[in-house]
Length: 135
Image (tube, rainbow, N blue to C red; front, top):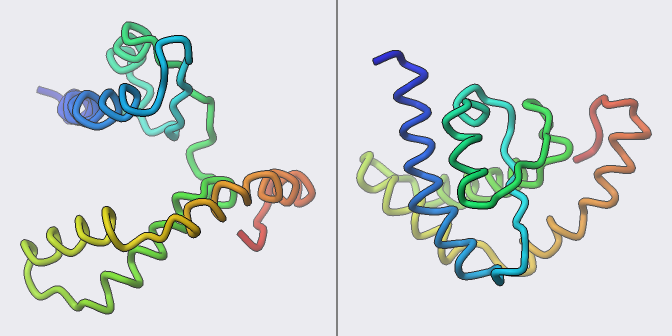
């Protein structure tokens, strides 16, 4: 099996176990969800595109290297700081702490602020001609 095939299979499994339940819990049948990922090869593989199409999910075209636009980068920073404070000593402890922080350590206000910042992010990246911004 080629390395990319393994990544594609793993990515599709992640979508099946995480994306589908999220869609089912947060969207009505009338909604057409749009999924955002980057242009990593495993995200854009034909097998993945076909799968997303089959389940009725559109993909938002998104540049592969866009931390100025993608608020998840800021969320990773918030998580990293919280994990660092807990100083995990083993891989199992790191796994437990990451899950704890992901599910319980991120304030709803933090998520709301990141979502609400999108308009300003787009304006800033447009103004900078696609270059770096304060985000």
